Length: 138
Image (tube, rainbow, N blue to C red; front, top):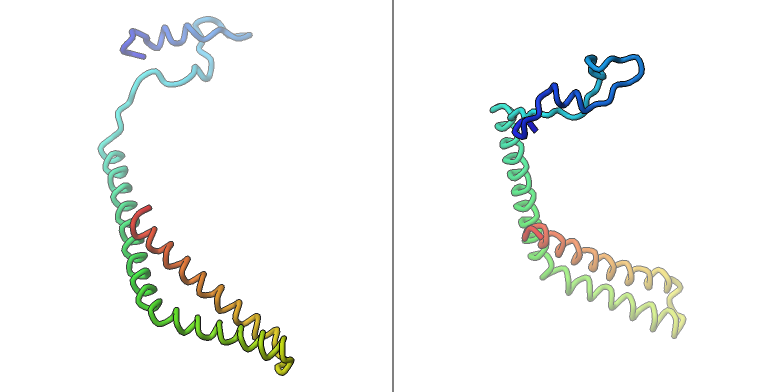
């Protein structure tokens, strides 16, 4: 506001006088500061260093996510058929021999195991895709 010709005297005169105060006595708080104080070099350097540190941290997180995605993708080739085979075989054993023929007393355990294996594999795939999204920066 100093560019528009306001000085501290005109700024103080805009503030209404309160009870017990004369017009020449400014109130304890006269509002926001009217003059721009440029930031010091140290503050500008600290802000730049903070942005640099944050960018370096984000780059490290993305690199770690990329490595995690690559490891999960390499393990997925072997994990998918093994987990699928065990889940399908547990389901067939539970339904055919447990519920239909009533030969296995642990039918609910086998059915639970097949569901847990499939849900575990789905969680594995979701984590893998989340790592890919973080590595891409999305």
